[in-house]
Amino acid sequence: LEVSRRWSDALSHYRSANDQWPDTNALKHGLRRSRIQCGILYRYSDRSFRHKLLSIPKRDAVGLFNDLMTRIQSSFVEPVTLTAFVAHGTESLYLSPANQKFLDKHLGDQVRSRTDAIRSLRRTLFTKYWNHPIRSSAEAHRVVEEVCRLASQTLGLPANCVVLEYVFGGCNALDDYSACLTPDRYSDLNANIDGQFVGLGIEIKAQADRGLLLVDVLPGSPALSAGLRDGDHVVGIDGTDCRKMSTDEAAGLLKGPIGSNVALEFVRDDSTDLRQLIITRRPVIIKSIPLVTML
Image (cartoon, rainbow, N blue to C red; front, side, top):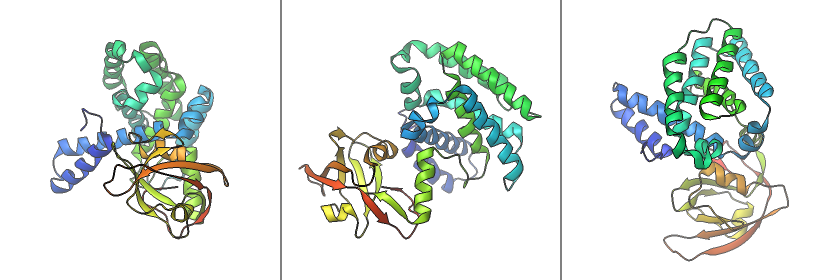
């Protein structure tokens, strides 16, 4: 599963295996790798990360990094050392070249020709910066600056993408209930807490080659009124095939302003017959925070 970069499946597999054999280090490490890879996959599938955060100048990315370190040191419920925070960022950057979304964004068609450069970068990250002792915020800043230069010289990675791995990856040092959210994720969280959001009124889960499984179609929602029901698979969104998309990628296409329309293609049960409908986005009231993506 890891070799084929099926990170969500790998995560589910390692979770189950780790529950059965909790003292097996190889399974613990696999669970950790797959969890980090899922984090990279999710943010590189997130429209707000790609179009907002990856477009900010390096100085603003460094500002986010510094602000996050300060907040964690002053406000997090348990002490987190700077060494741990920076080390988790290094680990995330080390693993990112194994993620296809990351490679597609930053290397594109040059991936095959840059294999040696990728190995060189990862080797230096491991030998020089892995668990490098950090005694002050100034030293953390210096290390991140060094890694930015190294990644640029070795692989041509932009500095802001490197710093953002330290921002998001650093939060892996926190507990299982804390994470750094992209702008869209943060907006969705607030909407769900408030109990109202603009959308179709569906909970979705991507299934490889099958499209988006409708886990739940909410009562009184635009989706229910239009004729969708639990168990349907959406395979096209406004003319774009979504059968190979991740949940977050498809979510970006399904979102839109109140009153706007979205055209869907879907299949029902085991049928291969495509059905089509158009749904108008409107406010939807929810009573609890969902466990899967709500739209």
